[in-house]
Amino acid sequence: MTTTNSDLDPFQTAVLHELRTHVEQRAHSRWRRRRLVPALSAAAAAVAVTGTVFVTAVHPTPAYAVTKTATGDVTITVHELSNSQGLQSALRADGLDAVVSYTPGVDGDNKLVLRQRGDQSVPPADAQPVPSVVFGTHGLTDEQRAECDIAPGQVAATVQQSDDGYRITIPAASPLQNRFFAITGVDATTMTVSYWASDGKHACLIR
Image 1: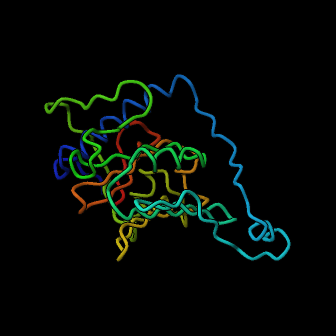
Image 2: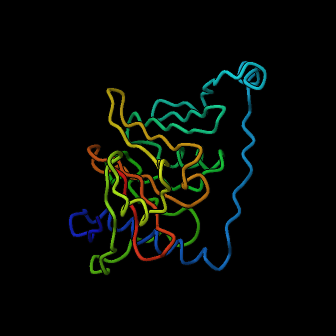
């Protein structure tokens, strides 16, 4: 089901606008995904021998934690809306081309970090609405899958709220493993993952 972003707040609208700008600029210079070279502990290295899937903690902090399984699934736990720059850097170090931004004033960052590279300005309030597909983490229709480049049986990401914050999971087979996406936290009540569809006509929001 395709909708406009009329039901989105200005912050989410700004993120979608920035996603479009970012993807259009990168269309002229194809981004090559950096090869993931995880620092495996001896226990994790044993996966090759035993076949057991270990989870290695990567970049744990009071504000967030990033874990990655030997099969490539990435789980991001956001305990509090602070240090968005740190989480963004941690994800990029693991080869994920992501931006992380929180509502100004909530986490003390006091600025939107919509894009690390180039202009970081927020589009004006009168910017044109960005058509979007908004969906939850389960129950996608075939139409939504097609619009958001999600193959049958594939999951782009899941967003779940837990006792210790928000948990975002990006499976190894997710299209987000090799494309730009944004993680946004809004007023400590909403966490979304968004990315621009390959057709260049709309954005996809998971919340």
